[in-house]
Amino acid sequence: MKFIAYDELKSTKGIPGSKTTIWRKEKAKRFPRRVPFGDRAYGWPEDVIDVYCQALAAGSDETEACVIAERERNARRSPHNPHWTA
Image 1 (tube, one colour):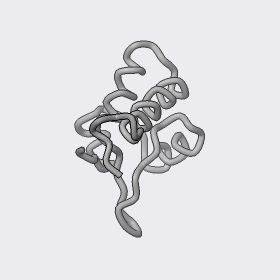
Image 2 (cartoon, helix red, strand yellow; image 1 turned 90 degrees about the vertical axis):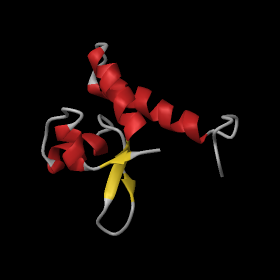
Image 3 (cartoon, one colour; image 1 turned 135 degrees about the horizontal axis):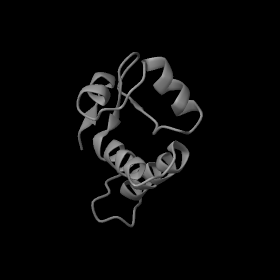
């Protein structure tokens, strides 16, 4: 699984907004949750961001796209998923 940093959100995924804007959207459940790697480092699972972008492109609003992306994250974490590891 690959994680992407904030700068990659803009440069490779085309997601606009400052760090503050992304943080506010995340808190309002309009953007997928980030994953902390340390005290000041974090990133987003690339496949979750890809699903979010696909949902937006398909016409979903930010809130609905976030729900769809979080379902993708949770499906990967399910013990019923053969690729899931504890």
